[in-house]
Image 1 (tube, rainbow, N blue to C red):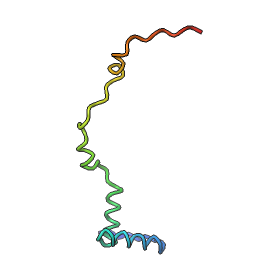
Image 2: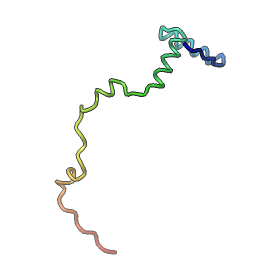
Image 3: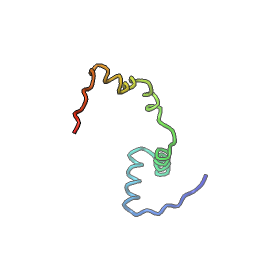
Image 4: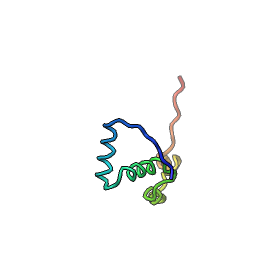
Length: 76
């Protein structure tokens, strides 16, 4: 496994430690989770599941079909 040296200030370290503790993870696990979330290259399953769950938007011609005939504009 690779190691990464990251220099951060005391405030950032405190924020990371607090967030990891709140999540019930070690600092290393929490940072790994954040990196995984931010570098994912596929859609989550919750988004994939939405495909096909709503009807496609009708084309403009379909929307305008009941509107009748347009009138001609006056010349200037």
